[in-house]
Image 1 (tube, rainbow, N blue to C red):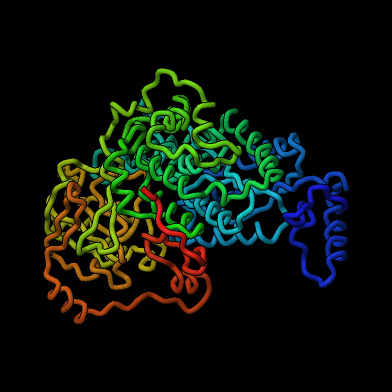
Image 2 (image 1 turned 135 degrees about the horizontal axis):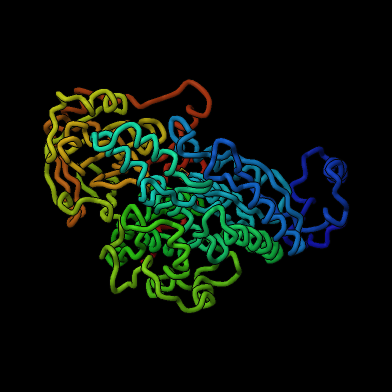
Length: 580
Ligand code: FES
C-alpha cells in the first residue's frame, strides 16, 4: 500500500499504529487484508484517514441525528480527498446513566482517548452533544494529541403546551415544581411531558450541553458557527459536511490539538462561559480539559473576570429565549463580535485561522434581541461567582444570574440532610422543621460522596413551603446542578463532605451566611467546635471492592480539578489559566 502522506512526522493513514506482531510488514499486510474484506481499494486506503467518533445510541436521543451527521461528515471528508472511518464509543445521556452521567464521563474520555490512540487515523471528528459527551471527547482528544475537531449534535426544537412555548429542561423543572406545589394536576403534567422535548437534539436552553457547545467554539475546536444550529436543521448538516472537509485539511497541516487548546483558548472559553450565563458545570469540565493540557483553572482569576464580563445572552434559565433563537440571531459570531475587546484574538482555531480572523470573516451583525450589546447586558456581571470561606476552603460557586437577588446577602439556620436518601425521605414531610429563611444543606453528593457528583444540588423546595408560595430558598451542597436549573444555590463546595471537608460537620441549627457581594460562604461555628465534631463523628471515605467504581473512588479528584482521575491529568503542570 503506497502512502504519499508519510513524511518526517512518521507514518500516516493506514500505516499508523500497527498492531504488534514483531513484523511491521506482516502487520500492514494483515491490516490491508482485513480492511479489503469491507471492499476498500488501494486508492481509497492511500488517502488521509479521518476517523469519526460515533456516539449515536438508542439510549441517547440528544444524539438522535448522529446517522445524518456521520453521512454529512463522510461527504465532507470525501470531497476534500480523505477517507472517512466511523467508529463507536461510549455515549452518555443525562437521564439514562445511573448513578449519574458524571460518574461515567471519565470512562468515556478514556474510551475516546484509547480508541484514538489504538486505531490508525490522521484526524478525528468528535460527534458529541449531551452534557458529558463534549467534555469527555475533548479530554480524551487532548490527551491523545492528534488533529481533532468537535462536531456538536445541536439543540432540540422547542414545543408548545396550551399556547406556551416550552423546552427542556428549564420548563421541565418549572412544570414539575408547579405540580409539586399543587398548581397543576396530573393530567396537565402528563400533557406537557409530550411537548418538552419536541425533537432529537440537546436541551434547548443554556444548560450544560449548550454551554459546552459554545465553549467548544470559543476554544476554537469547532468550525465557525458550529455551536448553535439546531439538530434537525439543514444548517446543522452543512456544519457536519464542513467539519469533515476541515478535518482533512487539519490532517494535512498536522494541526494538532495542542496548538488550539492553549492558555489563550481557555481564557476565551472562560470569558464566553461568563457572558452566556453558562452552566456551572462548564467550570468543572473546563478544569478537566485544561488539566489534560497541564493547565489549572484559576478560580480567583475567573471571579475577577466575572466582575468585568456581563451576561449578554438572553437565554433561559438566566433569560427568556431558547437556543434556536440564538442561532437565528447569528449564533456565536454575534456574541464573539460583542465580546471582541475582552477576547484573546490570537488564539488558533481548527480552521488554521485565529479567533480574531474568524470574527472579522463573519462580517457585520444585524438587528436582533437575543445577544445584548455590552452596553446593555441582561446581568451586569458574569453569570458565575466564586465563593470562599471556612465552609469551602477549596472554593464553591453560585450562579448569581439565576439566583434570587433578595437572597444574595443572607444568613439563615441550617436544615441538614445527610445524603440523597435522607433528602428523599424527609423533604416533603409536613413535620419537617423548615422555614423560608432557612438554608437547606445537602451532604455527600460530591465527586466521591454519591459517587459521581450528581446534579442534585438543585434541592427541591420542601413541599409545605412550595404550597405556601415559596419560589426560592438558599441551598448548599458539594454537588452540581443542571445548567437548566435556577435558584439561590451554592454548589461544588470543596473539599467535599465525604472526604472530611467542613460541610461534613454542619449540624441542624448552625448559622450559615452567604455574601455574594463579598464572595463569602461562612459557617458561623468556631474552629474548636468543628474540630470536636470531627473527633466525635469521624468520616469514613467511600470505597468499592471491584470494577470501575473502585478505580473511580481511588482516583477521582475534587471539583476544582475537574473531577478528573489523577492518573489522566498531564504529568507536567504548566501553570494556571487565565494568565491575566
Ligand atoms: Fe442531553 Fe440535556 S439531556 S443535553
